[in-house]
Length: 307
Image 1 (cartoon, rainbow, N blue to C red):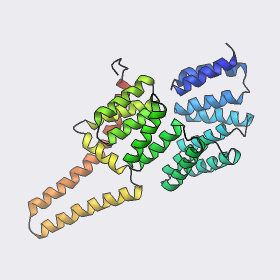
Image 2 (image 1 turned 90 degrees about the vertical axis):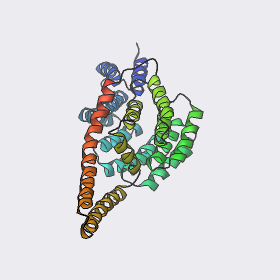
Image 3 (image 1 turned 180 degrees about the vertical axis):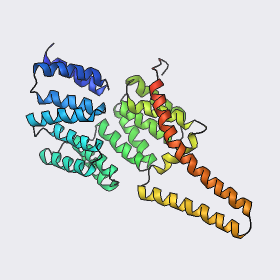
Image 4 (image 1 turned 45 degrees about the horizontal axis):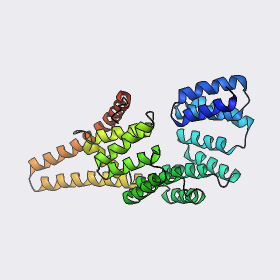
């Protein structure tokens, strides 16, 4: 088996999420050709997606020493900074990549992601528009644009973009996941399940599809469903707006308690206090339960031919 064929197989496993299989092939390739920057680079990408950050940094360092100006390696450095929550460094790295390769679509997509994490929504949209101008018929670019609109709460726009992406490639995993998220946001559970299951059928290892499927199940949970819907609705807001909502709710309940006390409705005042305490406890308790439930759903999921 020649190196090109093996490397193509490793790339295929990488895109399918079978990182351990890709890693095994790349290790074999590197034992024969230890100074190949592309092998080290793909190995770093596999390790990064597998959450093995330090190993990914090590392999990326070797790759960059061998080929310091390869745009996709420089962009991976930005992605490492994103994983480490060093967003300003990630942004600087994206700018450096675009200085080297001004029409590199992936750099615009990653840069938009960083801007979103920094709550710089307008800058994120500018980057996405650059990507669309470069590759208007790219399903990946369209789904990234759709995810942006979904993230900021523009569900109608996200749905239109998801439809455009599906028209281009009906079987695309990312496009189906996007449409599933849109349908879930609209409360169309059956349609959301269809797209989640279809994506899983395409790629049983898709974390995005499995997470969507788990979120659909959690949204129907009697205890977690209400919290999940509220959390989903405020997730489209900035941290400042979320903080203002929480502070306003705190002030409202406290003011209501004081007014009821002044009017000598002492029982109602106590009930109001208990209601607020219940809301706070419910919010605190639901977050760790949600993540435990999500982890449990992902771990217990088994591929079923009916999906």
